[in-house]
Length: 408
Image (cartoon, rainbow, N blue to C red; front, side, top):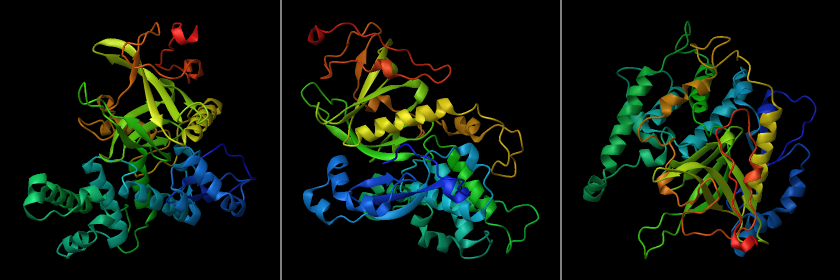
């Protein structure tokens, strides 16, 4: 996956905002550093598969990696705002669109419709009243909306599950949003530059806290359903960028946990110690009692995730304070205006897919003195809370664990 990058001369805007990436079904994705040679990495592919994936031996033997052009995880959004080259914007747009349609960037339905409307504008041209636009949109609905929002239900079972109504609502919402897409001032319908619509799409994606993330695959424990029934595990995607870490439910397409780096501590265990695990520790409460919560993410990519978190924090600490941004996307932005993240509270709707759902996670809870208040004892014998790295005025409280019998 992603790792620390070096610099290679003075690259152009496309090279700064993008890096080569090798990927396959079995091996997920590996972002290459400038010094990497794809041919040599391809020859080591079976070793990477065995080390960082759970792919069966037969799949490892037949898997073929592919070289792709992906957004550079370490490229700040504030610098992306300064890009005006239409071809570079198109590359960024295509990758963001693919992540939205694949639900790797979970979005609320109204945001999916707004983004889909811009895709309609770019693929079908300006909305024309009286034209067979609805038919064109309906035929290619999965090109504009994520699959879980455009399933066409038929029959009794679809009606009972509400899929038909949900799909119809999304389709009508998409058409309404398409009708509202504005053209640039002074642009004719035929000659309107696509750049403004690429910028509008990316500006909307910038509101998502996991935009530009590197993605990892793992599992978390489900909360126990009853005293005699254990919860098992659920597959998740761990998204890491320069701002923080998000744990996303693969099935439900919503965020389970979102943390900025100021709000967490982390560590990982290697296969030599026990099953590969990424540990995230953060503040919370248990029935009104302030506690520190410990989340266990099972993944062969735990070591990669831990390294990426550490490197992102180092980059954030080394970077200068965010300066007023110029050339922001969209006609309403002006030099010296606030950065797009200030708009993020608009996404915090009740029940938003962006909001954390701690109640859907099984965590180990501690009080400040380090006493565990749930009858679950971690296998680890050393504390990792000292690894918490504060960025400015963080809200995280470092735990001072007491001595345990197994440490005596």
